[in-house]
Length: 179
Image (tube, rainbow, N blue to C red; front, side):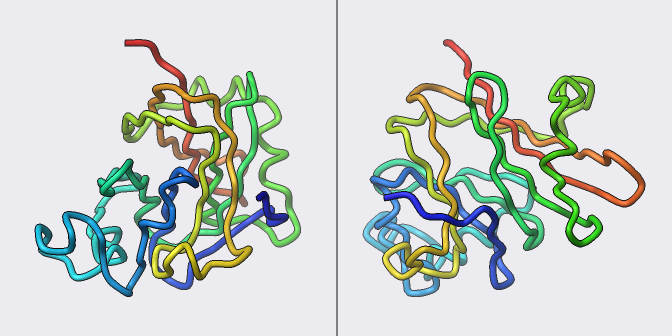
């Protein structure tokens, strides 16, 4: 079931991206199912997400993974690029009311920007949900974003983008790759 949100922001911690079929494993501040809760130094999935020190991190679930959108809580949006592959737009700052996603209409400009980091993921089903890592997915209601993918292997590349002096964005671009 899709939601109607076009943006999301956490209450202070990181956001997580999880395949919908695995999202119920995420327990937020309420605990962790990972390793049956005994093979981890953390007491909760939220603590595991907060341990990510970069813009992106991948942490394991019992089945699948969570991509952590780390660093700081930023307003986050989703847009679709070439071939209907989504990318995540996180906003450091911009003028109120400005549609920063419109500033990405010329996606070729992203090709000219050096990446600051990347992670590899394998998406086995088509829907990824993004939500506040503090909450179990079972309690987020409609407070999530949804991304549609073709199953396959992707590299997620992070890029810093300042389209003008009044906007600063962090872009997470998904790229399909073959092994």
